[in-house]
Amino acid sequence: MIIEHVAKGISLVVEDGEKIYIGLNSIPAIFGAFLARDLYKKKIKILGVAEADNPKSVTITPSTGDPFYSEEAPIMITADSFDLFQKGLLDVMFLGPVQVDEETNVNLSVIGNYEKPRVRLTGGAATAYLMPLAKKVILWNLKHSTKSLVKKVDFVTGTAKYSNNKVILVTNLGILNFDRNLKKWKVTHVYPWSKCEEIKKNTGFEVICDNVDIVKVSEEDLNFINKMDPYNLRSSLEL
Picture 1 (cartoon, rainbow, N blue to C red):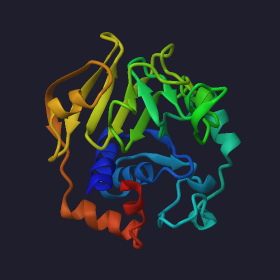
Picture 2 (cartoon, one colour):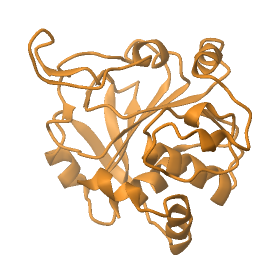
Picture 3 (cartoon, rainbow, N blue to C red):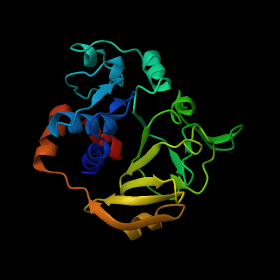
Picture 4 (cartoon, helix red, strand yellow):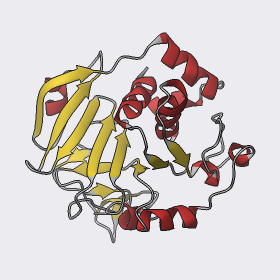
């Protein structure tokens, strides 16, 4: 139940009053945001899911941009959402980087040398533009290891290093917040199967880990996610 716990973790770090942007193919972010809004009744607004303005509901489908998401909601095109970030009118953005480093740099571009990469990734879209502008950046990564949480990313697609915003990382092992005073990542939550020592062992930089909470998924959480994902497409994310 990795995805379910990651989604529950995301719902915990979303706060009342926030306006949230979710890009395409961000299934954990979609689960987490809708859990926060519809199950836990947090007063948030969700934008960007297939360019919908606060859709009433979402069913996960094989399409990353299913137009049916916006059947019962106004259209908010992506360019307009980006303008809202620039004006300080959107609060939260989600990213799913392949690499994150100790300084909040993220990599969605290449693994290895940029000119001759071992792996060419999907690319950052507007990551470099939006990451410093969002009041809160929630990163998610489902393969927490020393290969994904690295001392220094292979390529800086975007960074919050020079900003003063909140940066939170939700992985399959726990939740980490970037402490700007200490300039270190602090573990705030673990899951029933993970512990601080495991997180430290699987992270390529120093993390602070004390006074952590445990993320627990209830039957109510699971039922809610099952209704959003009747075909269990989330299972493909755990491969």
